[in-house]
Image 1: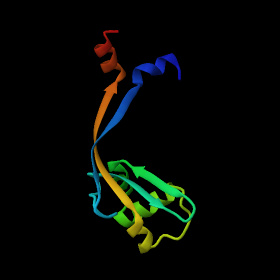
Image 2: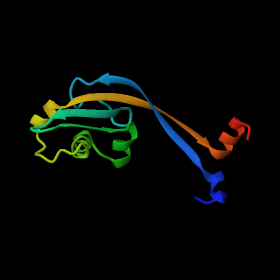
Image 3: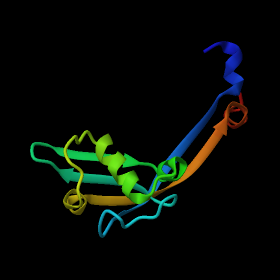
Image 4: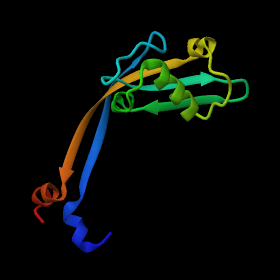
Length: 110
């Protein structure tokens, strides 16, 4: 990064809140909840997460979102309804914050 590019920097942060156990792997709302899944395979334990905006931005329904999240976890076996039934789901929400370089300078009194 060149010195002249610094003024164009911005930081975006998601603060994760309101963690809740789902009743099943479908107990969440696309665009509102992020999800973390956990499940046991034959030889390993698997887990993965998506932030609330991921499935909405990709245009995925819940099944596609869950299937891609299962693959993201590293699981390479057969995806079936039986696997969906074994998933432990945690849903959460996020609050986003953004600060530009100019805002940072004003805050830090630089």
